[in-house]
Amino acid sequence: MKVFSKEQIYEGDKVTEERQKLPPSELMERAGLQIFNWMHMRMQGAQVPIHIFCGIGNNGGDGLVLARHLITHGYNVETYVVNCGNSRSKDFLTSYDKVKEVTKKWPQLLKCESDFPEIHKDDIIVDAIFGIGLNRSIEDWIKALFHHFKASEAFTLSVDIPSGLYTDKPVEDVNGVVKANYTLSFQSPKLVFFLPETADYTIQWEVIDIGIDREYLMTTDTEVELISKNEVLPIYKPRTKFSHKGDFGHGLIIGGSYGKIGAVQLATRSVLVSGAGMVTAYVPECGYLPLQTSLPEAMVMTDIDEKKITDINFDITPSAIGIGVGIGTDTSTIQAYEAFLKSNKVPLVIDADAINMLSENKKLLKLVPENSILTPHHRELERLIGTWSSDFEKLEKASTFSSKHKVILVIKGAHTITVYGQKKFINVTGNSGMSTAGSGDVLTGIITGLLSQKHLPIEAALFGVYLHGRAGDLAVEEFGYQSLLAGNIIDYLGEAYIDLFKQPEQAQEEVKTEDKA
Ligand SMILES: NC(=O)C1=CN([C@@H]2O[C@H](COP(=O)(O)OP(=O)(O)OC[C@H]3O[C@@H](n4cnc5c(N)ncnc54)[C@H](OP(=O)(O)O)[C@@H]3O)[C@@H](O)[C@H]2O)[C@@H](O)CC1
Ligand SMILES: Nc1ncnc2c1ncn2[C@@H]1O[C@H](COP(=O)(O)OP(=O)(O)O)[C@@H](O)[C@H]1O
Ligand SMILES: [K+]
Image (cartoon, rainbow, N blue to C red; front, side, top):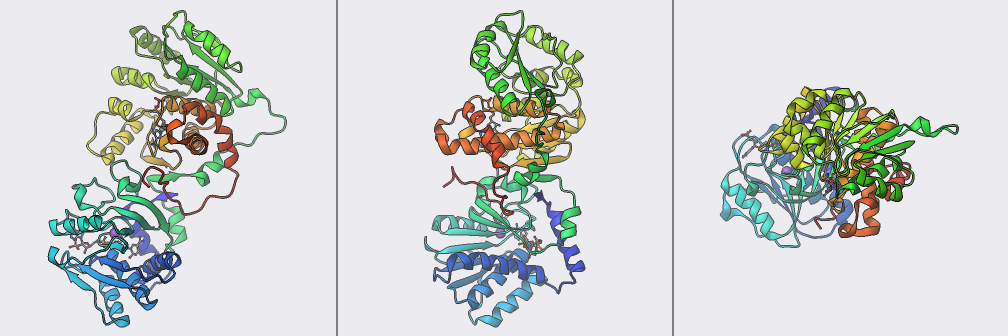
């Protein structure tokens, strides 16, 4: 699913109005009506007090259209106009006039704290104050209004985006944003719903279709995309009857050090379970026995050193290599890594200390093959690209890094974001049960396994991240958030593949709420 920028949304409105020859404010009418339909379906006429707070732009206009429909359907509605400026939008004014046609109870004007209405815990708040047009800091009395919402503990439904969130800039003051229980977002989710610093401002979200021109939506390229089942299904490669293991490649995992052989076990097993035909683990000698006994399907090659990698020297021809899990940063390992990078031509998946060694020795970056996949978590990314002041800056720096070094960055986290030049792909699977030792090693193995099967690097990264998260989602249903182990993710990888062909995914997605409820 594409995530459109603010500018693209405004352009989409314009194009739609032209191509569909829409009368003025028709899109606002559609937006308000859809929100009404959403509420009406759930409320079925219940007389719960609904407080609709409208700004004076088009977001406020949407709120007024909603108010009109709710009033005509006999709901218990109070409408307020948050008087935050002088420039009421044309469509807002049209909607305002139309409200007057259906009720004598005009919207109340709010100008300061003493105007705030009483809101009971069981009431409903509709937040239609600011949408994507927020363009400056919020005045204190409006922040106080947001606080008033929160203090009431009433269910808060935000229209399009929680008021106070910019679409393309960090939050200036945490008190200047509405905390929404639910956000109904028009046509496209907003990037901020997925970033660690801003995702918490809405517990759930859903996309509302307001009939923006299909061709515009199809042909407009976006920098950001959500990766869910619909996007990864085309990447899946069915097997043919006469296939043999040679068709699915030979993955190689290089890593491990004394006390960290488990990381290699997890990654190596993941290579096979993701579908590679064969796998070899290259480990220090101390890894030989544990690997051979725990994973009979794998082949094992060892370094001359007992405890660490000192010389990467193998006589196989792997189709993909994953390097770094449990490898450490011993000086002799760094030297072996450099020598390996100088001779290697195979696409790489680079994880953990193999990333850290690049960060410490930036000259090594020049030796990394084009389109290699780096899978840093937060700290590893920081060492690699430097610190950032906001999620937006982080993504910008990651894009610059990806373009400069021609690599794919898989930024791991609650919503893993794969950065490929200017493109950013946000994964929707995964859960906090996966915040457990070794789950990153599993991801490295999965992506290496997919690369072995001749997927393009970007496909291997996106598909791997999706499957990893989906396997985690299936596994957590059996093991629970606290008790899920990285190995359980591997056990559910097969289910994740099978699940690809289960019921089609809903067009409208919801963020899981397991830890927020
Ligand atoms: N395709 C779609 O998605 C469609 C989207 N639609 C809806 O349109 C919304 C976008 O509408 P929008 O452009 O009118 O902007 P909006 O968010 O209402 O805010 C602008 C107003 O707020 C003001 N203002 C800004 N910052 C402020 C501040 N800090 N403190 C005080 N005031 C501030 C600003 O004032 P000004 O800068 O002009 O003085 C202006 O008056 C979008 O989110 C969606 O809900 C549908 O109607 C149709 C199809
Ligand atoms: N809260 C979460 N929601 C979704 N996925 C998560 C969450 N926490 C961790 N993960 C996933 O688990 C993996 C953890 O990787 P990493 O931190 O490298 O672990 P390790 O080094 O222990 O193997 C990443 O793929 C990450 O996206
Ligand atoms: K809003």
